[in-house]
Length: 387
Ligand SMILES: Cc1cc2nc3c(=O)[nH]c(=O)nc-3n(C[C@H](O)[C@H](O)[C@H](O)COP(=O)(O)OP(=O)(O)OC[C@H]3O[C@@H](n4cnc5c(N)ncnc54)[C@H](O)[C@@H]3O)c2cc1C
Image: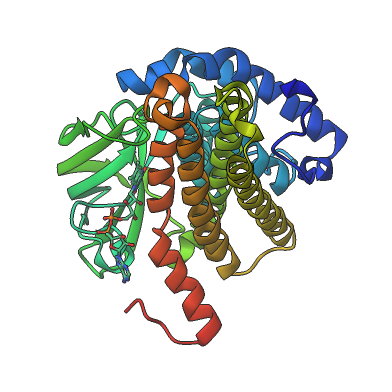
């Protein structure tokens, strides 16, 4: 019966893709259905990252899709579909491709690109994005405490980073530090195996358990000048990069809601109480419709953001509104879905508990709900409440 019901993309936003993009998205779904969805709960329960999936993921040739000529809408829908199958794999993909590889595209010298870009796009080497610190999260732009000191043809790095996704196994980290000479911001392509780099896995997480987040300590790490991004001197230089990543987190919030709706509707149609499917009860239908409304509103907002990106976008406080709004709707959607599964909603055996828990990471990273709200507040009032 379920196959005859409408999909969670109730208003058909996918029809805005070109035929070639729709066909490619179908390939992505096929890969996710076969290689990811059946194993995702097991990876999550064991908190292990599926390194062996990477060659198959690389074969899809999806690295930095806009650079390859696809639309922003397609890039966003790929992230939503990946998240729908496994939020952790989508997060790996975004950290590697949309931060690390995208930064190589945007800021890399010809030498850096020649050395790393193709292997990074093919997932032969993996990257991380190391900005957050133990004592500076939301205020890291002003508070960045990791230092870089020039010493001849190299730099000496000291400090600590926290929450770094892919941090335990990556080959390189795009790492941010403050120049001790003049306080400006420096970005490095740090070889993660250099002497003085210590990486420790963050244990006992309740969200994105498959993602390997690390605490990083840098103790007198010597990095060649050739591994610095020469074009970056302030955080403003990274604006487009971080804006793109923030928008993709909005797409993750869409994917999380698509997944929650899929699972909750299937369960509600199959689960019988009082002699009939619980989907037949008015209160359960109300909950499913609220989930669908949230999902559709989020999808519509993200589709419009993709149009703004095509048009250039500027500073785009709209990206901050989209991240804040979609993640707030997502939190309600996954909670409704969790409730529809009753007791079975609290075990990952029925998928929903993982969807519910992973939503918490999406709510917090790439600027928490509050920080994105304050960015929009500043844009609409002309008054900054952040500092
Ligand atoms: C699973 C996961 C993966 C991550 N991956 C990475 C990564 O790969 N690389 C990386 O660099 N970072 C990563 N992060 C870090 C993430 O970006 C930070 O967690 C986020 O920026 C928030 O910082 P914080 O956790 O230090 O919280 P804090 O900044 O300490 O904030 C705590 C609370 O205070 C609120 N708050 C703070 N300031 C204000 C204010 N002015 N007004 C109102 N409320 C405020 C926040 O909204 C939040 O609710 C990851 C985080 C998680 C959870």
